[in-house]
Image 1 (cartoon, rainbow, N blue to C red):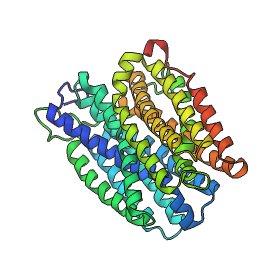
Image 2 (spheres, rainbow, N blue to C red):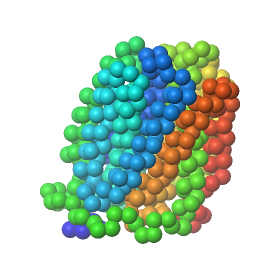
Image 3 (cartoon, rainbow, N blue to C red):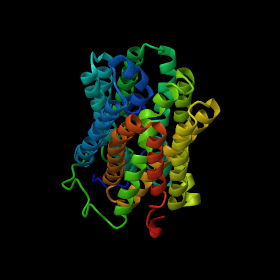
Image 4 (cartoon, rainbow, N blue to C red):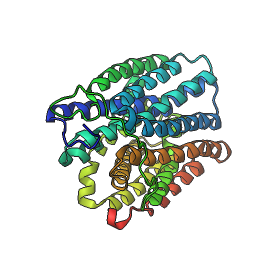
Length: 395
């Protein structure tokens, strides 16, 4: 059976893949990667991190993601989605455990780097599995529901942080237990290559060509520019948002944790991305969402002491960020329809590069000028990104 087999998963197995994929994304993105920002106040107190160093550690996580997504994009067609997806869960669990046991800032940085790389491993195989094994009428919705797992993971991190209070190591050990359980689930639910009904027992068909030819196609330059600006624009809130809200002049640690819960919960709205695109069009949905990202970022910096404003801005940020990643996923899949893992991989790679550039930049600006100028620069990047749209024929 070839990689282009026309057999598809049954409804039950499609639902199983969707649930397991959403959970794997929740673990890798929401816990292994973005929970760093959630727990940054605790890390700064424990290890004596200043804003610039905290931003550098976050940047390392994004760089690791970039390297991992390249490797995952290449290996997914060759090894099959199941093996690569399970590897993502193993890497996430390992990184989370290292963070939980870190005795100093160096080991903490290593754990954050390893944990962050799991996100790069996870996205391509899940996109590949959905594109190859899920029926066309529900394919887009399945992709975006899985992608919304980031919000679920972030929402989970908030209550865990509240329950553990100052015992952040217990929280990360709990994350490790969750990650290991999800890894086992994904290793069973993600299909092998060509494993649609009626059989799911044969090995993946190896492909000689692991990257599409040509790699850069009409419309890809716009996607690269838009994803970079989205990464720059979102880096301030993901890395320093909780620290800003929980610190002096902010709403405090408990209220800021609730803000993070709202951010993640509203991120689950990303599951409706496919329907939004079908009604509004990819270009219009992208522009509106990027403006929302900019507004939420700026408002958080201007009014961190208002509970209502902070909670509202966090909720808006979570919703539009996950919508944007879903749009980026669909955008890449349109350009590289014959190689969805490569399309998703490139878009998310460039997004992470933007975040890798943005995190230390924002950290340095906070140190030198304060949070308002730093967050304003990030918001400005998001505004610019609102004007970089897909080719009209692709909308």
